[in-house]
Length: 213
Image (tube, rainbow, N blue to C red):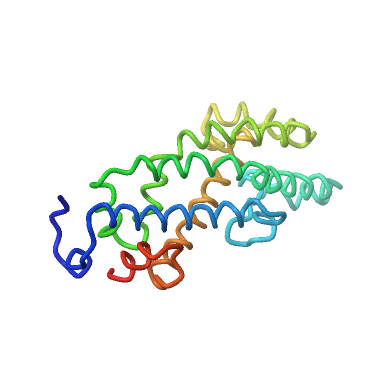
């Protein structure tokens, strides 16, 4: 069923074993990424995924701080990252569902598709549904801040004339997008780790499959 040459397919593994082994590794990698990001400081304390101020606010930050708004800027950064951390547990079910729905051709593409094939698969299958699921959670956290309201009052008009990117015009949409970027980046890190060290994979089948790559 999988017409492919190379050491992986020479193994005495059934097609079912290959699929099961890959799914073991995907559930492990995605689950680990979600767990790390869901912890306190999962975003805020990790420079790889920490969500910064939107570009427009970042550029204006020196002036705003000189006007005594430094505390509000810091509060916004903290709130954005805490919102992302709080939203992460909601991603687990959709990521696992994407694994369960994998076809044999998906498995072949992932096993032969390079170090980021898993990450690309998850992005393709989950980015839209995850955005919709996380947005309300992020909105509830960010809409309480006065600076959010002031920022969006300015950017609403600016976005219409392309002075601000559409995705940056609303804080909640900006944070949700950045949260997903962080999630996929951490999944990519887990994917590379499993490919480079198959012995760390969760189950025997996963170790056999990735050990042959």
